Length: 396
Image (tube, rainbow, N blue to C red):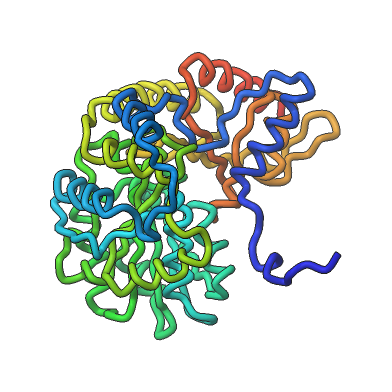
């Protein structure tokens, strides 16, 4: 059957691929521990669930405005003011079916064929693939583990050309866990001031999962604010992955462009989810903060166990819920007749031998690494790392 050549422009997300392979192995009877997906293992907080239930009872079952309910857009403004000190109006906000759609909306709205999009590595797998779908040219900038995978002004300046249209980054970062301080963002902001045609996507979905203090947004620099598109959502900080709601905060012209696109894809986001989102964004943050306390404990234990494995190096994550170790010391090693050529092979080996799913660093632009999630229970993490340690110890 002939299919669109558009499908050849981009690849299936490795994160979803590994989760799928893990489910298939589990269906065959294997006890697979999933450390591949970025999904909190917590339940949605009760006060949000009550708002969701009330929305069902109140018959929020009809089409919603494409941009989102006005009071939800106002709730996003309230959240940004309260948590980030940022002033936005409803006209700056668009609600979508997950932050992934928010990202796709923006890229499709601002990138033309041949435009260059600068992305520092490591990066979330979908950034590059959405740019390819928009027929833009991906410009990857390799960062250094010595700098905790954070971009320097010199690296950014060297990557920008006359064709650069967009810059995409996340803080806290998936997969490295890097968190930019205000001072580090100011250094990047100085570069962007020299290049007024470059737009900036700031992915802040892991905002509440932060182990070093206050979240800092690059949108705080008022002279750049009109060029910055904040992307955020409910999945990570509120344990609402399945409810699918993301949003952007941006210049009204970009919001209107994204609304036009979304009106053809999906129209408005789920009505019930939107009502629950109002409670999530404006209600009690205590459950989110408690989740972060637990993630902090898991991070410490994960690092302790990971550092006991010979030949592994790591930049300790300051946010999100992943570790991103360098594992190239194991490339070229064997167990029996099985040769580990690269990170892809190592992930498949760990899945099939240790029954632990991880994700190859190649998908994130760093082929010497693998990503391991600690968004799982402490007991599962300890069992998974015991298996990984044994499996990697068998490689000679």
